[in-house]
Amino acid sequence: MFYFLYQVLYNEFGILRVFKYITIRTGGAFITGFLIFLIFGNGMLKFLKKKNIGDKVKVYFDGKHNSKEGTPTMGGIFIFLATIITVLLWGNFSNQYILLLLLGSTMSFLIGFFDDYKKLINKRSGDGISSKIKFSLLFVAALIIGILLYRIPDFNSELLIPIFKHLTPDLGIFYILLIVIVLLSTSNSVNLTDGLDGLAISLSIVSISALVLIAYFTGNVIYAEYLNIPFITNVGEITIYGGALVGVGFGFLWYNFYPAQVFMGDSGSLHLGFVIGMMAIMVKQELLLILIGGLFMLETMSVILQVSSLKIFGKRMFKMAPIHHHFEKKNIPESKIVIRFVIIAILLSLIAFVTIKVR
Figure 1: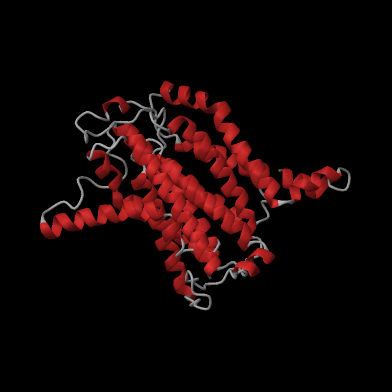
Figure 2: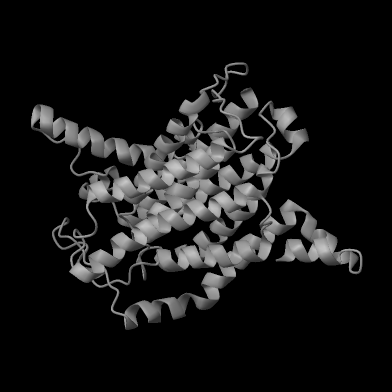
């Protein structure tokens, strides 16, 4: 809205020129997203409690998580709505990347919402939609985004290899397959990570913040040339979407940090993971996402290794998977695990920026 006000009225009101700048609108989106949650957060909790939308906690830890029984869930609904409202205020809707982010986030949110709703109806946390249906729906959503991105004229199918300056293989039509793999991986990884108070949202904030900076550099011809990364026309606009989501994330964390007053549910985790994957693809940093979202990858790998070890050797590799539960089984306090994971995530993002500069 503010961007279009600038376009229509800047001749009469020169001060509206500030809304031309991506940095101003990103900052505005961050503050708006945070304030929406801060102002309406208590109303969110009251609504969820009134509708009896509480989480059913599985018995994993000899009663350690019993206190979480009945904690309001499906907070992802408010993450999604607050982000959309914020982007409506600060975004440029003639930008194809913003439109694609809105489409992708809506599809992934609806899949997560469908899963959460079915769990609520069945009154048991394990009885959402089946894994096959969820995977199939996410696959279709990822394929749609892949095809639409591939058809953007200014968006090429080259794959950037971190550190190596001149190694950029062109994947052609197979780039769509890479997009699907990235989006499925990130959405499911964030979903697996959502097991401790504040963990998934904190790591998402770190990853999205890193991608916001990269998007700004990629969409600025001067910075892109200096860092020897591809300049992509109009992609800088996604910093507004990322800024909104980071602000909303901090607002949600206000209520989700230990002890959590609300959980995000699949409607939040699948949505966040999908958007993280889309942003990484749009700025051509699919491989660098392995570093930026390194802990999400670690959570997924811990599950794969655990299942493989049980099938092949009949023994567990970890006390429990995903790996955050392994550390919890070792009697490390929940809040300490989250803080340590966040510190590691920040360090991994800094390393990712170093590889960009080295390149």
